[in-house]
Image 1: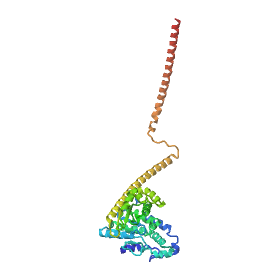
Image 2: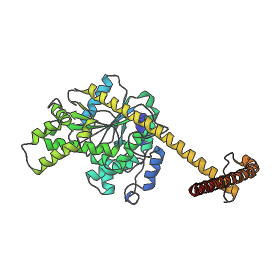
Image 3: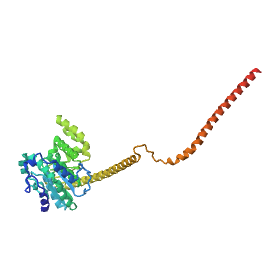
Image 4: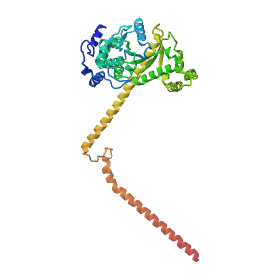
Length: 401
């Protein structure tokens, strides 16, 4: 662990003991060239499941734990760490929350070792949320080194557990969050674990808000998502599963309320019905440890889905490359043909060129045949006229008699 922290400490950021960045250098946020350089080193091309990369590995599975403030993300991650240790599962822990004072678990990679949150607030003259966002931005510029550290240990790991800031939007709706998720997804199977406060979601509008946020994260990251209904030791999550499986049961709860919020919630339940069908979920308790097996089962199934999509997209990319290569060869052959002919009309080789002599020799015979046929038609017409004249003469002779 000390060696890994030392490797990360070599990344010099604002507030780190190795280097102090001046206000002039820090003004305006992250330098664009640094971000682009970092993305190039990570081989990031596009977001989402199925991101193809030559360095893609099937292990370990990255679990990014996100959720609303107070949902129990850090407590749940602590329970996941304890479960991996008790079950002889090889885990690797990363903390991306620069503002947390103490962690209930040990982390292999900690953003606080390289970015000093309070120093960032002072130098950038920002508040707590701005300090978290700026710290993540600075950390993401060297995230390729973090990926390299995990890659070196990939064969020895089963899961990478990632804790995120309490302010969920700082990761899910920021440039640094996109860089981090895309970097993971381009190298390892990556799954989003969205933590839901189960007792708080018993109120229909709160439940719908959580589902909308989960849906937005799913479409924003394009990664498999697992709903982790936390605190089931306080309130069971069966009601939430029933609402997700049968929108009529959800409507029965809100039928008594005719406010605008209830009407909107009822309409949104129809829109999210398809979203629920392909969503995996598990009830867990960070306190008692209940539901850990079901949670990891949902994670493994989502990882398999990610790998299948990656293989499918890779095959599609190969087919597209083959089509593009064939099109390029056709255009190259066309260009060569045009150079040979000098832009003049070219006769395609159809195998008819060798028959031109035969056609010339046959030409006269065909003409003669045509002439003979015409003469035959003229003779036939003359014979018909003669026969008609003879019949008229015979008819006149009979009348005379």
